[in-house]
Image (cartoon, rainbow, N blue to C red; front, top):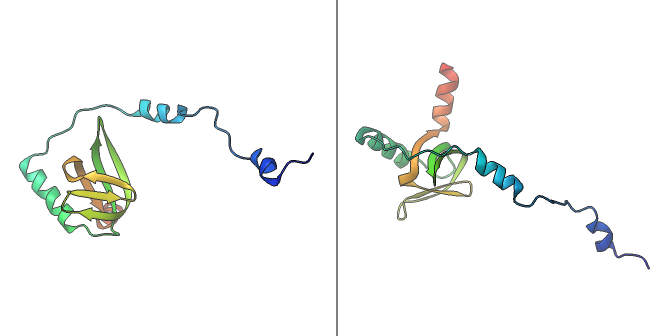
Length: 114
């Protein structure tokens, strides 16, 4: 008896025999470090940068995530002042975890000087 189209197509679906393996490798590549405390001046400067951000700005945000610093680059999809979060693409980042923010203007300055 002939197999249905769905059954024949199933043989071409991707197969991942190592479910969770790649996530484990990525987790092991993280370098654990403690959260750095910003000085009062650095906190104020960062606060001013965050206030100047708008939806759809292209940014690169360095933030503390559990035990390591991560840099996420992309468009801002949401800024929630009530809950103090910044969403870059689909990653929601608390203001208190942000270490640094670079905007597209900052990228252009780096290209001019570098």
